[in-house]
Length: 421
Ligand SMILES: [Zn+2]
Image (cartoon, rainbow, N blue to C red):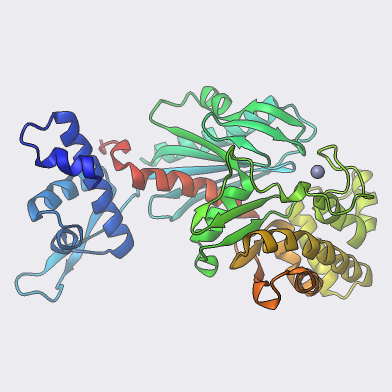
């Protein structure tokens, strides 16, 4: 409880608004306790939170009514007396929807409050050739189907998280720029809200794909490090930075533009208009050019697949078969990747770097060269060279992170979920 809320609770003449604030804070505490340590009895929740049994019972009744908690089967909990029913997270009536706008596809992923996946959708869509509005209309249609389908099953969608490949004004959901989509100042949150006719209670949160993927990786057991760097690996390259357990967004929310740091002043022109950005060296188009050039010409002729996930599979297939072109090409990509990663390694000293997108698929063929470069360039020596690993979430990291953001919103404000009708 915050100090002011605690004082309000003690004050005999506390205004109803303060009492409501205290109750809101306590709902969060009880729900959070069951989430982190459950299943728990009411008595244990009271002991852990320092609240009275009566208060806990009242709060639990409300959380059950909102279908956020439920009782387990009867169980003896080791104490004297009759067996009690313990509490666990329910959340089956609540869905969080994650969406992703990628230059080559649109994706959706929904979960219930306990993190159980409900639906997954993926649609090949060339956002580089369509107007922003057409892309957002297509995304809204996909989202609308999932929201309506969930509602028919009695599940209410409480919020939508959207991952986009570029810097975002978080407060307004405005995408400042997305060079690979040719977007500038696109009000994604506002457009989606209008197209879907969302009520005020349903939130729309837009964030950079790398930030959301970093959050998803942070929540993933394999990568639960306090200092983590997530690097996207698609047409665009970006980084999500978790420092000391928190997302590091920077003053304006524009941190992590790793792909647009210049690594080769004599290099090619980047989608951002600058020269020799890391993205021009290690983005998926560069990997296809050096490791599978025949596929690039087939692509140009319109006879080869365009989906980054399929391209990643093809690169892996060729490398695994020992295709010399693929092997030398990926080694070259690994070398540039190591040069690029040495910048955040020296600047941030992360515990782990998680490689997403196509990097994750072909990591075994990139890492030897990347680690060689990192060891050469880590100013503090070998002890500063962190673990570098492929993402276990692959191409779904961003869209899962987008759904996770909404789940976290509910745990921070359970009163937002309506009482089941
Ligand atoms: Zn650039």
